[in-house]
Image (cartoon, rainbow, N blue to C red):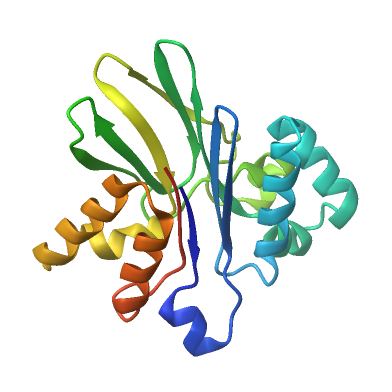
Length: 211
């Protein structure tokens, strides 16, 4: 399942959707561009494309830096985005995350829950590794991935979503939450997209789900 929807605020301000993702083989990826980056959706889509071709994060950023440059403005405008990834192995799922978002967990009985990933006010961006320390107020020692494993004896599916999902998770509309979970359980991305369309005002930020 791949869902990529623009948020209501981006529509109102005439901005592009700054999220993207993909699913290929045993790998799922979601990236969320920094809202302060003028063209962060460009870096996001290039990252997803090259990752889908088998390139590592280091290889991708080496190419991004060679393409857009390493000035503070270039890094801010093109390279600042969060990265959430899930890889499936024989006995477990491995989630590796750099920045905010959500892990979607479906246990062996089909129950779905959401695990929030948050760095607080200042999300981690892998691009900070390409800035000099004097350019940064936070993460001056560099940024890495947080890794979590989920055993298949407990979970039958693990997905990832950008932090636009928070508008649903934090909502008081329990009926909408139930309908959303049921749409995920159906395995049909069109049901999720239609639900988001019907509730567009709730989803203020872009949302991407790979499940």
